[in-house]
Length: 65
Image 1 (cartoon, rainbow, N blue to C red):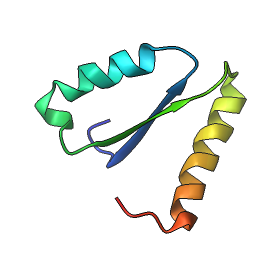
Image 2: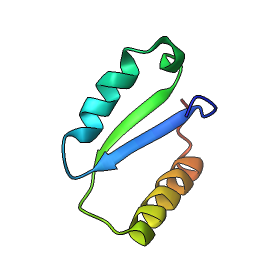
Image 3: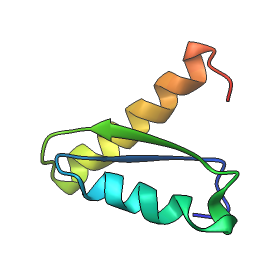
Image 4: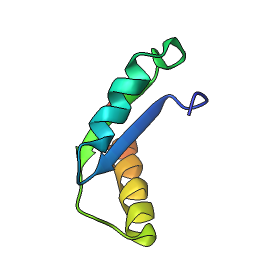
């Protein structure tokens, strides 16, 4: 994930928070923008749709990070 500027961690449980804490302790990821989103259990197609919608919405929302 080091080659990306922004990452979204999502899911129904606290593993995303634990992973965020793990990444936050590593210097390689200090410049990485990480957002955490709650989400229901999803199959692979739903996950792809979630990611596509998340980043498409961000492109058109005018939000700059």
